[in-house]
Length: 417
Image (cartoon, rainbow, N blue to C red):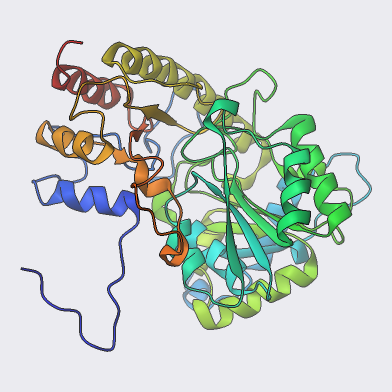
């Protein structure tokens, strides 16, 4: 029997990845344990990749950096982020980002928290399915109203500019949040489709908040390298487009907990104000250590190595998943996840939570699909369970050997069809 929560505090649920990792830990899992295959953690492999720049192995701290840093981030890093986006996405365009268009925070969740904490009394559109941590994030701030938008599996979870215009006008949306590429489906809004979104937002004055933490994991021929909504912005001060990224996925340094947000200066000022009471600012020594990682040559070399290594793992995971009997309707266009339906499997393996618990018995971690049914404040009471109760998310983020081990064990778990 669990201990009661002291009366002044509410029970706070864990996000999906934290929940499944805690369940695995209760069964003996420890990070780095070679006996386990962690296909649930939303983390890329962090070691050397062929053709990638050398990994950072030591950080020298200048004693002057032991002080508090500015809440909006160290000026040198803000300048470096702006210069990188101008170099990769805005070359030749008259409107350019400056350091004043950048806010640094201590990780992606914190950057998102600052953003939603600074929102006004608006309707905020969010999608189903999407990133599990959005649920508590969107449920804890009462000034705005989270509005769910259901994506169609039959359309490959796509949502074009026409769809966006309809939802913005019909539901009175003042802002829209989405991960791009999408975690968990792998759907990637890019090219003309992304430009259409930005044009609609500009015309309708609806702020777009893009979580671009998987922007370097782009698998289509249309997007052979890093991509960003920053490329579609006409005027960095007027267009209502917010871009959030960081070292976690695209640089493969999740332990650094360092992120940035780009947007109009007035938005950045609001985010810094929110940071002044939420967190106080990111670690100054890490901000200085990150400067060489933002050099364009370094970024492009790392992105190229990611593409080569993860494309091979994507093919490996797709082939194995289909052999298991999982239905991957749409191969991921981005991210390092498979969003897989269990509906073709025999009972009880066609249920996401059962599949997850049976996999734990074989020392494999995955994430049940119901965690991606983002439902802030549990405002949508379901009488028939989650729409995604027969899905799981499987990560091919770990090293290839661990991915192979996990998929082999899942194959052995499923009875012959």
